[in-house]
Image (cartoon, rainbow, N blue to C red; front, top):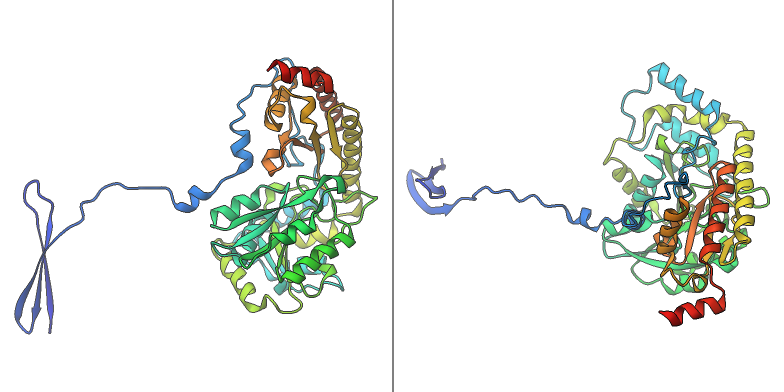
Length: 455
């Protein structure tokens, strides 16, 4: 029988070495001395962490401006409807979670893709004759953000590219770059209520395009695509054989004069991963309950994408089980008047904000049709002392204590985004201060020209 003898020798200040002897049939053969590894600390951040970049944080954190101490701060920057307490969730939603918590039946681990009964509840809620769903078509996730992350991770490899709206939600780029996926930005058209520039979109497709992200209703635009426009988007995806990742977290959050169409209900041949959740419509973003709906009626995704989503979901142990336990009741027993009241408040705020900002020289708001946002163009030629939207919004904070996000955060300079979930009196006060700010700094055509000459 062969045997091995490894001897470690170290003397004084010299590093230890390995003296390796191999015994074969009783004969010892020396393999010589191999210098050992000298331990040392070498802890470095991963390449993935270095590639992770949040444009909003990168811009906002470098603004470093102090608000006017004589004016209370009004923040119109955060897309969280719960901040000011004027938009509470429905009592039925709260009771559902309380009863589940008291039952003690949902304190353990669930399957990584969610409880079967909860997946059935989501499938039943979103299924329609044009786009039927079963439990196996639903993956529950820790919020819509994780749904988007899993959908990207299953569709795209490092070195491939995805098509992302401009302006668009910054998380798409943050997630993609961290995975080594290239981002190609397609244009939205403010003069057409933020419809997609379809010609530009199609021109970006190449052999490395893994998916097209469609965000409807839109963050940051507050726009809602018509049925005919969605059909044109689907035609591009069908021609180019590109699957769609549909970010529909604001689904059904549309104003009364508009209709929301889930994109999957309009196509039988384009495979779609639709991402949604409780956060916005039910006004509970901190509960972290989202889902992916798999629409694949031509079996283009097949088992590979489904199995891939299951495997990816197993990296963590699924979303909060307490909220899962309440999910069926939340979906099916929340009274319709709750949704109606929420939308009435948002529509009223949107109308007030749009009317007030439209009357301010140098600003051009784009009327929203849903979601929780409104985009405003800054006619920079009339504000020549500011280089860009970031400087404009910085000064708005320091002089008027009103915080709006510069649209550079959304890859769309010289606009800013207003969140319309704040109380009505706060909207009116903010608009009044924005008007005062613009009147202070506005330069007509002659004034702007004179200022340029003085530089």
